[in-house]
Length: 364
Image (cartoon, rainbow, N blue to C red; front, side):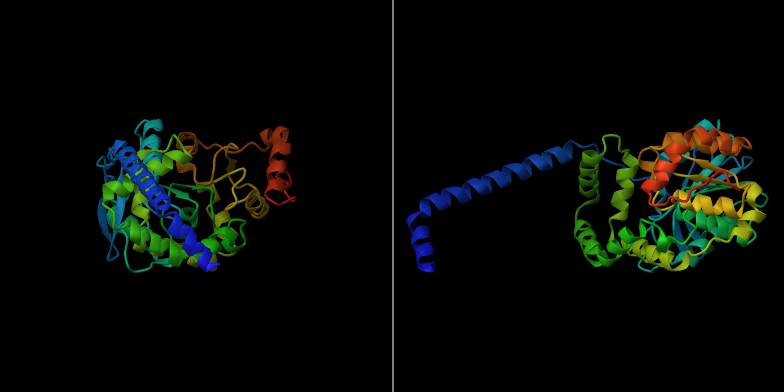
Protein backbone atom coordinates (compact mmCIF):
# COMPACT_ATOMS: atom_id res chain seq x y z
CA UNK A 1 0.00 0.00 0.00
CA UNK A 2 2.79 2.42 0.94
CA UNK A 3 4.64 1.52 -2.26
CA UNK A 4 1.48 2.29 -4.27
CA UNK A 5 1.19 5.72 -2.60
CA UNK A 6 4.86 6.45 -3.29
CA UNK A 7 4.38 5.62 -6.97
CA UNK A 8 1.20 7.71 -7.13
CA UNK A 9 2.97 10.74 -5.65
CA UNK A 10 6.04 10.25 -7.81
CA UNK A 11 3.91 10.16 -10.93
CA UNK A 12 1.95 13.27 -10.07
CA UNK A 13 4.50 15.65 -8.58
CA UNK A 14 3.59 18.49 -10.93
CA UNK A 15 -0.12 18.08 -10.22
CA UNK A 16 0.47 18.07 -6.45
CA UNK A 17 2.70 21.11 -6.73
CA UNK A 18 -0.01 22.98 -8.64
CA UNK A 19 -2.63 22.01 -6.05
CA UNK A 20 -0.35 23.16 -3.20
CA UNK A 21 0.28 26.47 -4.93
CA UNK A 22 -3.44 26.98 -5.53
CA UNK A 23 -4.26 26.26 -1.88
CA UNK A 24 -1.52 28.65 -0.72
CA UNK A 25 -2.70 31.42 -3.05
CA UNK A 26 -6.30 30.89 -1.89
CA UNK A 27 -5.28 31.11 1.78
CA UNK A 28 -3.26 34.27 1.15
CA UNK A 29 -6.21 35.80 -0.74
CA UNK A 30 -8.68 34.95 2.05
CA UNK A 31 -6.28 36.33 4.70
CA UNK A 32 -5.87 39.61 2.78
CA UNK A 33 -9.66 39.87 2.37
CA UNK A 34 -10.20 39.25 6.09
CA UNK A 35 -7.61 41.87 7.08
CA UNK A 36 -9.18 44.33 4.62
CA UNK A 37 -12.64 43.74 6.11
CA UNK A 38 -11.25 44.14 9.63
CA UNK A 39 -9.60 47.44 8.89
CA UNK A 40 -12.78 48.75 7.31
CA UNK A 41 -14.26 48.43 10.79
CA UNK A 42 -14.06 51.75 12.57
CA UNK A 43 -11.57 52.18 15.40
CA UNK A 44 -13.05 51.64 18.83
CA UNK A 45 -11.96 54.05 21.52
CA UNK A 46 -11.66 52.76 25.06
CA UNK A 47 -14.44 53.57 27.51
CA UNK A 48 -14.26 56.62 29.73
CA UNK A 49 -13.51 54.71 32.91
CA UNK A 50 -12.54 56.43 36.13
CA UNK A 51 -10.17 54.28 38.16
CA UNK A 52 -11.08 54.41 41.84
CA UNK A 53 -8.98 53.03 44.69
CA UNK A 54 -11.39 51.07 46.88
CA UNK A 55 -10.45 48.85 49.80
CA UNK A 56 -6.80 48.59 48.62
CA UNK A 57 -7.77 47.64 45.05
CA UNK A 58 -8.42 49.57 41.85
CA UNK A 59 -11.92 49.42 40.34
CA UNK A 60 -13.14 50.94 37.07
CA UNK A 61 -16.27 53.10 37.39
CA UNK A 62 -18.45 54.72 34.73
CA UNK A 63 -19.99 58.05 35.77
CA UNK A 64 -22.85 59.87 34.06
CA UNK A 65 -22.16 63.24 32.46
CA UNK A 66 -23.94 65.07 35.32
CA UNK A 67 -22.10 63.25 38.11
CA UNK A 68 -20.55 66.42 39.52
CA UNK A 69 -23.95 67.76 40.57
CA UNK A 70 -23.82 66.61 44.19
CA UNK A 71 -27.36 67.82 44.92
CA UNK A 72 -28.82 65.03 42.80
CA UNK A 73 -29.65 61.58 44.20
CA UNK A 74 -27.46 58.70 42.99
CA UNK A 75 -28.38 55.70 40.86
CA UNK A 76 -25.77 53.09 41.73
CA UNK A 77 -25.74 50.27 39.18
CA UNK A 78 -24.19 46.95 40.22
CA UNK A 79 -23.43 44.48 37.39
CA UNK A 80 -23.94 40.78 37.15
CA UNK A 81 -21.08 38.43 36.27
CA UNK A 82 -19.01 39.29 34.20
CA UNK A 83 -18.75 42.50 36.14
CA UNK A 84 -17.34 45.01 33.66
CA UNK A 85 -19.15 48.33 33.93
CA UNK A 86 -18.87 48.89 30.18
CA UNK A 87 -21.77 46.54 29.42
CA UNK A 88 -24.11 49.04 31.10
CA UNK A 89 -22.94 52.24 29.37
CA UNK A 90 -26.02 52.57 27.14
CA UNK A 91 -28.39 51.59 29.93
CA UNK A 92 -26.94 54.24 32.26
CA UNK A 93 -27.13 56.94 29.56
CA UNK A 94 -30.76 56.06 28.81
CA UNK A 95 -31.64 56.17 32.51
CA UNK A 96 -30.34 59.73 32.76
CA UNK A 97 -32.17 60.69 29.57
CA UNK A 98 -35.55 59.25 30.60
CA UNK A 99 -35.44 60.67 34.13
CA UNK A 100 -34.74 64.16 32.71
CA UNK A 101 -31.40 64.28 34.56
CA UNK A 102 -33.12 64.34 37.94
CA UNK A 103 -30.60 61.71 39.04
CA UNK A 104 -26.90 61.16 38.52
CA UNK A 105 -25.61 57.64 37.95
CA UNK A 106 -22.58 55.40 38.09
CA UNK A 107 -21.79 51.79 37.23
CA UNK A 108 -19.35 50.12 39.60
CA UNK A 109 -17.29 47.27 38.12
CA UNK A 110 -16.55 44.19 40.17
CA UNK A 111 -13.13 44.23 41.79
CA UNK A 112 -10.72 42.04 39.82
CA UNK A 113 -12.85 42.17 36.67
CA UNK A 114 -12.10 45.72 35.54
CA UNK A 115 -9.25 46.41 35.66
CA UNK A 116 -8.28 42.75 35.65
CA UNK A 117 -6.26 41.50 38.60
CA UNK A 118 -4.16 38.38 39.12
CA UNK A 119 -5.80 38.04 42.55
CA UNK A 120 -9.12 36.17 42.58
CA UNK A 121 -12.01 37.88 44.41
CA UNK A 122 -15.01 35.99 45.75
CA UNK A 123 -18.63 36.91 46.55
CA UNK A 124 -17.75 38.34 49.97
CA UNK A 125 -15.04 40.54 48.40
CA UNK A 126 -17.51 41.94 45.87
CA UNK A 127 -20.01 42.86 48.58
CA UNK A 128 -17.27 44.53 50.63
CA UNK A 129 -16.05 46.51 47.59
CA UNK A 130 -19.52 47.99 47.02
CA UNK A 131 -19.89 48.75 50.71
CA UNK A 132 -16.56 50.60 50.76
CA UNK A 133 -17.46 52.58 47.64
CA UNK A 134 -20.67 53.82 49.24
CA UNK A 135 -19.07 54.72 52.55
CA UNK A 136 -15.85 56.25 51.21
CA UNK A 137 -16.66 57.71 47.77
CA UNK A 138 -20.17 59.11 48.15
CA UNK A 139 -20.90 62.28 50.10
CA UNK A 140 -22.51 61.75 53.54
CA UNK A 141 -26.29 62.05 53.34
CA UNK A 142 -26.43 61.17 49.63
CA UNK A 143 -29.74 59.60 48.63
CA UNK A 144 -28.88 56.29 47.00
CA UNK A 145 -31.11 54.28 44.68
CA UNK A 146 -29.46 50.96 43.95
CA UNK A 147 -30.00 48.96 40.74
CA UNK A 148 -28.70 45.41 40.92
CA UNK A 149 -28.67 43.18 37.85
CA UNK A 150 -28.45 39.39 38.19
CA UNK A 151 -25.72 38.71 40.79
CA UNK A 152 -25.83 42.45 41.54
CA UNK A 153 -29.26 41.86 43.09
CA UNK A 154 -27.69 39.50 45.63
CA UNK A 155 -25.17 42.22 46.50
CA UNK A 156 -28.00 44.75 46.89
CA UNK A 157 -29.74 42.54 49.45
CA UNK A 158 -26.47 42.05 51.30
CA UNK A 159 -26.04 45.83 51.54
CA UNK A 160 -29.46 46.05 53.20
CA UNK A 161 -28.29 43.34 55.59
CA UNK A 162 -25.20 45.40 56.44
CA UNK A 163 -27.32 48.42 57.33
CA UNK A 164 -26.67 50.64 54.30
CA UNK A 165 -29.44 53.20 53.97
CA UNK A 166 -31.01 52.95 50.52
CA UNK A 167 -33.97 54.92 49.20
CA UNK A 168 -34.99 52.13 46.84
CA UNK A 169 -33.44 49.04 45.30
CA UNK A 170 -34.50 47.73 41.89
CA UNK A 171 -33.48 44.14 41.28
CA UNK A 172 -33.32 43.26 37.58
CA UNK A 173 -33.52 39.56 36.70
CA UNK A 174 -32.30 38.79 40.22
CA UNK A 175 -30.19 35.72 41.03
CA UNK A 176 -30.32 35.36 44.80
CA UNK A 177 -32.01 31.97 45.08
CA UNK A 178 -30.06 28.66 45.04
CA UNK A 179 -27.97 29.41 41.96
CA UNK A 180 -26.62 25.86 41.76
CA UNK A 181 -30.18 24.60 41.17
CA UNK A 182 -31.06 27.01 38.37
CA UNK A 183 -31.54 25.58 34.83
CA UNK A 184 -28.53 27.52 33.52
CA UNK A 185 -26.18 26.16 36.20
CA UNK A 186 -25.39 23.07 34.10
CA UNK A 187 -24.09 25.30 31.27
CA UNK A 188 -21.97 27.24 33.72
CA UNK A 189 -20.45 24.06 35.14
CA UNK A 190 -19.49 23.01 31.61
CA UNK A 191 -17.73 26.36 31.07
CA UNK A 192 -15.94 25.97 34.40
CA UNK A 193 -14.68 22.57 33.27
CA UNK A 194 -13.23 24.20 30.14
CA UNK A 195 -11.88 27.32 31.79
CA UNK A 196 -8.20 26.37 31.32
CA UNK A 197 -8.65 26.07 27.56
CA UNK A 198 -10.74 29.25 27.36
CA UNK A 199 -8.14 31.21 29.32
CA UNK A 200 -5.45 29.81 27.00
CA UNK A 201 -7.27 31.17 23.95
CA UNK A 202 -7.62 34.53 25.75
CA UNK A 203 -3.85 34.54 26.35
CA UNK A 204 -3.23 34.02 22.61
CA UNK A 205 -5.59 36.86 21.66
CA UNK A 206 -3.74 39.03 24.17
CA UNK A 207 -0.72 38.91 21.86
CA UNK A 208 -2.69 40.95 19.31
CA UNK A 209 -2.70 44.77 19.40
CA UNK A 210 -5.78 46.14 21.18
CA UNK A 211 -7.26 47.78 18.08
CA UNK A 212 -6.89 44.58 16.02
CA UNK A 213 -8.46 42.48 18.78
CA UNK A 214 -11.36 44.91 19.19
CA UNK A 215 -11.90 45.00 15.40
CA UNK A 216 -12.06 41.19 15.30
CA UNK A 217 -14.61 41.17 18.13
CA UNK A 218 -16.61 43.89 16.40
CA UNK A 219 -16.54 41.91 13.14
CA UNK A 220 -17.68 38.62 14.69
CA UNK A 221 -20.23 40.34 16.94
CA UNK A 222 -21.88 41.80 13.85
CA UNK A 223 -22.39 38.26 12.53
CA UNK A 224 -24.63 37.52 15.52
CA UNK A 225 -26.37 40.89 15.85
CA UNK A 226 -26.45 43.85 13.51
CA UNK A 227 -27.41 46.13 16.39
CA UNK A 228 -24.38 45.44 18.58
CA UNK A 229 -23.16 48.66 20.17
CA UNK A 230 -19.52 49.76 20.22
CA UNK A 231 -19.38 49.78 24.01
CA UNK A 232 -20.32 46.08 24.04
CA UNK A 233 -17.51 45.17 21.62
CA UNK A 234 -15.04 47.22 23.65
CA UNK A 235 -16.11 45.54 26.88
CA UNK A 236 -15.89 42.05 25.38
CA UNK A 237 -12.34 42.90 24.26
CA UNK A 238 -11.62 43.89 27.86
CA UNK A 239 -13.11 40.62 29.13
CA UNK A 240 -11.02 38.40 26.85
CA UNK A 241 -7.92 38.58 29.04
CA UNK A 242 -6.58 35.77 31.25
CA UNK A 243 -6.79 37.61 34.59
CA UNK A 244 -10.28 38.95 33.86
CA UNK A 245 -11.56 35.50 32.91
CA UNK A 246 -9.95 33.89 35.95
CA UNK A 247 -11.90 36.31 38.14
CA UNK A 248 -15.13 35.75 36.21
CA UNK A 249 -14.82 31.97 36.55
CA UNK A 250 -13.65 32.19 40.16
CA UNK A 251 -16.60 34.38 41.14
CA UNK A 252 -19.05 32.14 39.23
CA UNK A 253 -17.81 29.05 41.04
CA UNK A 254 -18.14 30.81 44.38
CA UNK A 255 -21.66 32.02 43.51
CA UNK A 256 -22.76 28.42 42.94
CA UNK A 257 -21.39 27.47 46.35
CA UNK A 258 -22.54 30.51 48.36
CA UNK A 259 -25.91 31.66 46.99
CA UNK A 260 -28.38 29.32 48.68
CA UNK A 261 -31.82 29.89 50.22
CA UNK A 262 -33.03 33.52 50.09
CA UNK A 263 -33.33 35.56 53.26
CA UNK A 264 -37.08 36.16 53.02
CA UNK A 265 -37.12 37.81 56.47
CA UNK A 266 -34.74 40.47 55.17
CA UNK A 267 -36.86 40.97 52.05
CA UNK A 268 -40.04 41.25 54.14
CA UNK A 269 -38.34 43.84 56.37
CA UNK A 270 -37.35 46.05 53.41
CA UNK A 271 -40.17 45.17 50.99
CA UNK A 272 -41.34 48.78 50.67
CA UNK A 273 -37.95 49.72 49.21
CA UNK A 274 -37.61 46.72 46.88
CA UNK A 275 -38.80 46.17 43.32
CA UNK A 276 -38.25 42.76 41.67
CA UNK A 277 -38.18 42.59 37.86
CA UNK A 278 -38.32 39.08 36.37
CA UNK A 279 -38.01 37.77 32.82
CA UNK A 280 -40.53 35.53 31.09
CA UNK A 281 -37.95 32.94 29.99
CA UNK A 282 -35.03 33.69 32.30
CA UNK A 283 -33.24 30.44 33.14
CA UNK A 284 -31.06 32.15 35.78
CA UNK A 285 -34.07 33.55 37.62
CA UNK A 286 -37.04 31.49 36.40
CA UNK A 287 -40.58 32.38 37.29
CA UNK A 288 -40.61 29.67 39.94
CA UNK A 289 -38.31 31.94 41.97
CA UNK A 290 -41.00 34.61 41.78
CA UNK A 291 -43.63 32.10 42.91
CA UNK A 292 -41.50 31.25 45.96
CA UNK A 293 -40.92 34.93 46.67
CA UNK A 294 -44.64 35.79 46.53
CA UNK A 295 -45.46 32.82 48.75
CA UNK A 296 -42.97 34.05 51.39
CA UNK A 297 -43.70 37.78 50.94
CA UNK A 298 -47.24 38.01 49.43
CA UNK A 299 -47.32 41.78 48.95
CA UNK A 300 -43.84 42.11 47.43
CA UNK A 301 -43.57 44.61 44.57
CA UNK A 302 -42.83 42.55 41.45
CA UNK A 303 -42.99 43.04 37.69
CA UNK A 304 -42.56 40.72 34.71
CA UNK A 305 -40.69 41.90 31.62
CA UNK A 306 -41.97 41.57 28.08
CA UNK A 307 -41.31 38.19 26.53
CA UNK A 308 -38.48 39.37 24.25
CA UNK A 309 -36.45 40.97 27.08
CA UNK A 310 -33.58 38.63 27.93
CA UNK A 311 -31.59 38.14 31.15
CA UNK A 312 -28.64 39.93 29.52
CA UNK A 313 -30.87 42.86 28.56
CA UNK A 314 -27.84 45.07 27.83
CA UNK A 315 -27.53 43.39 24.41
CA UNK A 316 -31.05 43.86 23.10
CA UNK A 317 -33.40 45.77 25.40
CA UNK A 318 -31.64 48.68 27.11
CA UNK A 319 -34.35 51.14 26.11
CA UNK A 320 -37.23 49.04 27.44
CA UNK A 321 -35.53 48.23 30.73
CA UNK A 322 -34.40 51.83 31.23
CA UNK A 323 -37.95 53.11 30.74
CA UNK A 324 -39.33 50.54 33.21
CA UNK A 325 -36.59 51.38 35.72
CA UNK A 326 -37.48 55.07 35.62
CA UNK A 327 -41.14 54.14 36.18
CA UNK A 328 -40.11 52.18 39.27
CA UNK A 329 -38.00 55.11 40.50
CA UNK A 330 -40.49 57.90 39.96
CA UNK A 331 -43.71 56.23 41.08
CA UNK A 332 -44.97 53.67 43.51
CA UNK A 333 -45.90 51.33 40.66
CA UNK A 334 -46.98 47.81 41.44
CA UNK A 335 -47.77 44.90 39.19
CA UNK A 336 -51.56 44.63 39.04
CA UNK A 337 -52.22 40.94 39.52
CA UNK A 338 -55.62 41.38 37.84
CA UNK A 339 -53.87 42.47 34.65
CA UNK A 340 -51.98 39.21 34.67
CA UNK A 341 -55.11 37.05 34.58
CA UNK A 342 -55.97 37.66 30.87
CA UNK A 343 -52.37 36.73 29.99
CA UNK A 344 -52.14 33.86 32.43
CA UNK A 345 -52.01 31.22 29.69
CA UNK A 346 -48.93 32.91 28.19
CA UNK A 347 -47.24 33.05 31.59
CA UNK A 348 -48.21 29.43 32.31
CA UNK A 349 -46.80 28.39 28.92
CA UNK A 350 -43.54 30.13 29.78
CA UNK A 351 -43.50 28.27 33.08
CA UNK A 352 -44.03 24.94 31.35
CA UNK A 353 -41.26 25.75 28.86
CA UNK A 354 -38.96 26.39 31.80
CA UNK A 355 -39.87 22.99 33.23
CA UNK A 356 -42.11 24.14 36.09
CA UNK A 357 -45.84 23.43 36.21
CA UNK A 358 -46.50 24.83 39.67
CA UNK A 359 -47.01 28.53 38.96
CA UNK A 360 -49.92 30.18 40.69
CA UNK A 361 -49.50 33.93 40.88
CA UNK A 362 -53.01 34.51 42.11
CA UNK A 363 -52.90 32.48 45.31
CA UNK A 364 -51.24 34.24 48.21
